[in-house]
Structure formats: structure tokens, C-alpha cells
Amino acid sequence: MAYEAEGKLYKKFDTVQVTDSFRKREFVVEIEDGAYPQVIKFQLTQNNCDKLDPYNEGEPIKVTFSLKGREYSRDGKTSYFTNLDAWRLDKVQTAAAPAANNAPADSSFPSIADDPGSSVGTDTDDLPF
Image 1 (cartoon, rainbow, N blue to C red):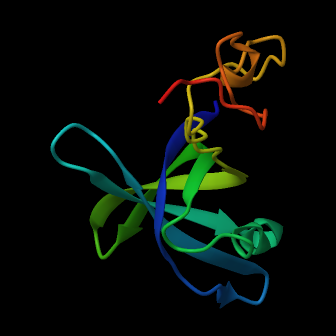
Image 2 (spheres, helix red, strand yellow):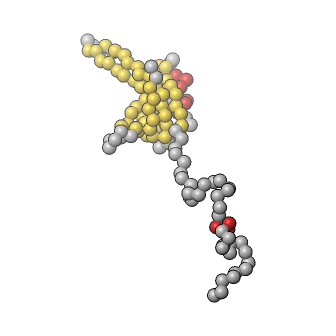
Image 3 (cartoon, rainbow, N blue to C red):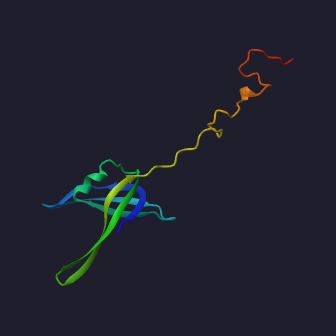
């Protein structure tokens, strides 16, 4: 099952060669959650490790990931691990800033020069004073 999270790339780490046949790269995304933002660690594995290269810390990012869990036993003690295994990264488009003026871009909207009493664009001034 795929999940998505959107936030700001908070920290990215170098790729680590865990064994001869396994490598991983971890990164942290800061996700707004009310008054207290959450910092969530994800991992990329194998060929997906390079997908993080084009992103810089501080940039908005969308992460598509799967939940991975496993059991680990050692010395008679059992532990359980959960990983957020990212496999797709996308840039998040930020909202464009509003235009400086609120006039529509439609060229049929009249300007001040279209006012019959306006002297804009003319050299004559018929005011008596």
C-alpha cells in the first residue's frame, strides 16, 4: 500500500553501503502538524538512493512511500522495526504570488487613457487654470 507525505526537506544523508548487495540513504522531512511540526525519517534503498540528489534541504517535497516492518531476535530478545521506505520523490509547486495589480489581463478592460475627459496621451490641456 502506498502512502504520501508532503513537507520540507529538512535533512539528507549520504548513501551508506550496508552490505555488498544492499545500500540505503536516509532523509528527514519536516511536516506541518498544527503547532508542532513533525520531523519524519524516510529511507531510499538500492537504485532509489540517487533520487534524492536533485533536492536541496529546505525545498518542498512530496514523498511516496511504503510501510515496511520486520521482527528481529537476538540473545532471546525480540524487537520490531518499522521503516518508511520511499520510492518516489516529487517537487511541490508553491502557490504563485498574486499579480501586483488587480486589473484583469483582458485587453478590453478600459484604461485611464480611454476616459473621454482624460488628457493622458494628448499634448493639449484645455483646463482654464
